Amino acid sequence: MLTTKKKSLVIKKSQIHDKDTGSPEVQVAILSRSIDDLANHLKKHKKDNHSRRGLIKMVADRRGHLKYLERKDKVRFAALTKKLKLD
Image (cartoon, rainbow, N blue to C red; front, side, top):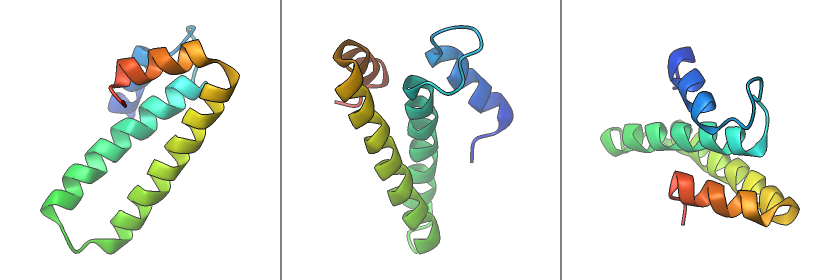
């Protein structure tokens, strides 16, 4: 789970302007960090199926945000995938 400090650091790295907290870039960055943390948790706790379901939902949510961004602005999409290494 992301703490407030970790989340604010992720937001600062990917925000477009100073008060940006809801752009697709920020949302994808937050989801990516949560997915990484949860994937590490599941490596240790293989039978935690409730968290696995949450992971699948987060991956689907991130995929939706990425599809939206790709449809609206391909340049921002390419920059984000390169920055977060999602290729």
